[in-house]
Length: 428
Image 1 (cartoon, rainbow, N blue to C red):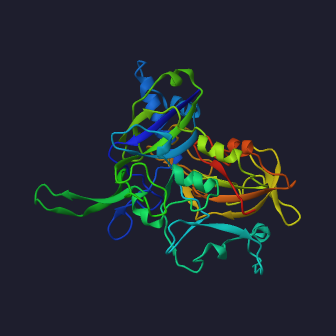
Image 2 (image 1 turned 30 degrees about the horizontal axis):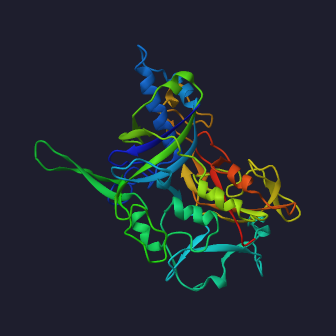
Image 3 (image 1 turned 180 degrees about the horizontal axis):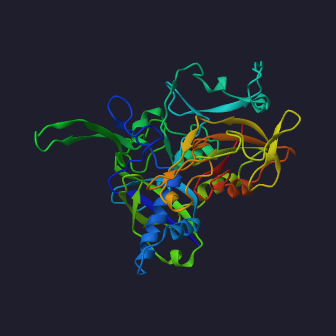
């Protein structure tokens, strides 16, 4: 059965990134801006396991913990931003900013990059040959202000903004000016160890770590400024992680944990049950019913996505100077026209039960007391876009678009990696 929760940090979180624990001259421990799906799966496994331990006389063994984790599969992860004092609704879902959205100075909304064949090519022998068959993504000169300076846009878009972008609606997307309100806020906590005898700080034991606050103030009203209105403008909002979990173990499916611990410092989080977390938007369905979708789709990653070939989707191969393959839920051959993929996101973690298995890893690394690091995977960041086109020249249907809603693609899908949604490409 499937269970859906909103995981809400009670007072923020600290999720160590890949840099050293005390990096730089300030001995700063850096935090990720957002929890990885792999971390959330571990937190849910711990929450469910602790509830199961209440029903038995002894604690779970390391092997039982591993078996429990294999029976809790994270199907999707969706960010949420809800006003304090309000219950979660689908209008509170937040989505990663699309990589094909460019914010230009002087524009109230982002500009969509369009695919165009390159007029000239230059390649080095070391370049990936797959890149040579792709179109370039560029700003359409007809969009206006095409020579304006790009600006950094918000990391997260609201439900209304993102659905407008998927529909290729004119003026869809937020303004760059709301960027400070669309992310967890960072603070730095300073720590020092005192010498009890002298009453002074001990030399060399001054350090700091970065902490992420999940209570933020929403952007002010945008009414009358040509931007979509936020339904809770100016409110204090709490951020959370919406998770859809497939539970295959019968006992685990019956428990309902209300508390979880997050990341390295195990900060407390509340678990709220949600019934409509992953529902396909009715407004999007109605728009699709009246659109001629065409032979192209834009596929957006909603969570970090790992492919064996890096940015190139699994199963695609070079054929007659085209990258051709098949999509995971739409059984038609397609070609990859263009892609917008940002810098890779390292996905790793700590294996707490590693020292209870064999004496060493397969690559020769010895286990340490308390576990060992997991192998690092380089993932395409959320918001990455792949533009695909049917090889038979036929049009995609509204059912095709809906079938791709929160579809899984790539490696690590049981950990919540590789979530996707589809948008139309009216330009193609």
